[in-house]
Length: 476
Image 1 (tube, helix red, strand yellow):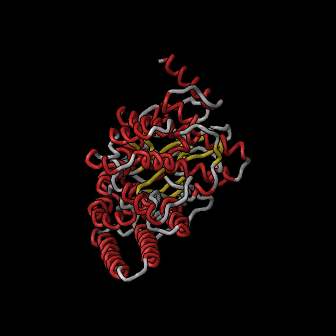
Image 2 (image 1 turned 30 degrees about the vertical axis):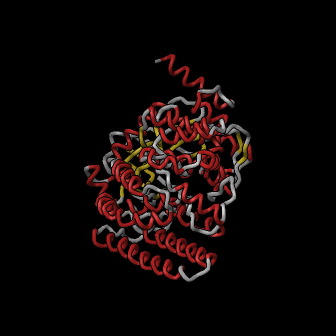
Image 3 (image 1 turned 30 degrees about the horizontal axis):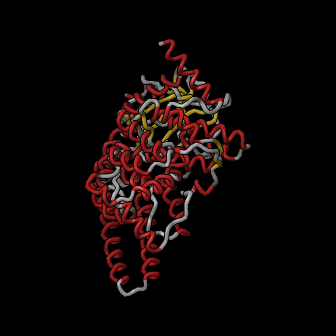
């Protein structure tokens, strides 16, 4: 699920679901950009280094813009590719262009127009076994929210329960199959944007995760599982699922009233800090306590309830991770916390981020510097208030220039991204962006250490949560 709009958003046109139409979009994009990229590299041979760098920056920006324009019209897996790109730092793009490109890519998560309800009603009749009146006493045909593979409507059941109904777009399942076959065509373009990314692993992971997202019955199981885990929690809430009314392409769950993210952003500092801590605890706790990754911490997926709890929505993008993976992530965070370059390099090797065949090419001190820039905000305990700069992808560093940048690119290209870590990295990145949008302050490293290293509660919320789980264990 994506951001809930205050007013029903403007409807989109018909989805291009045909195999030839979708393949033509991607193929045309790849061919055109490939020719332009080759022309730019040829011209750069006779340009000064400064003009060559500027030309590559402009070409990268043009590529991202065209990716956004094309993929944003296609939904399904094509849009998921674009959403994933919103988390990548584009090495060749000038500083002044970074924020604009990130905003455009973020639009693939935020600014998603719904499709006309008439296109959905036929699918709903088939899924529910008859007209809507047999299931709902009232059904709002205006979209309440829109996402890449489905949209949400409010309704009331015959039993009088207020619910939200997520309906999969007709044809999206078929379009996703075509998109995943076409994904290999996009790999060279993505590689140009982020040379250090293992694009084949990314494509394989996306295929598996998106396939699961298409199954709303599986999502209902995920949501019921986490709702049971959090039932009675002092500051978290998950809506109940109506399993009797949910099907493979229709998901019905409890309607929860609450303030949306933009309203919370306008509140006083204390409320934003508490809200940010709850968001952080929910996603980090699931990973490092329960070994469950929710890969879509989009701010449209949680609400601030009147009782102070935060309600979390959308459980389609979920992955269980094993104890070895969690141990590897903990070892990396601990090495960064201890400023131990040798331990960090060993942890990166053990965790699969650094292939043994490339280890000699990586300087341990440089790797520590890189990882500190990336994760010290949650790995190293200290008081910290996020700034809006983090909301647009800002980092605690200055971008290197000249020879230093060339060396950094060479070092980064030695690393890879294990497929099972893609959602973990996505979660970390989006939570950091959310905290930046909130301008939230806390000792994030001390809070994370509760989950990463088993340290005592760092805040009153941490103590309340510890007491809750202690009672649960005692009652088991």
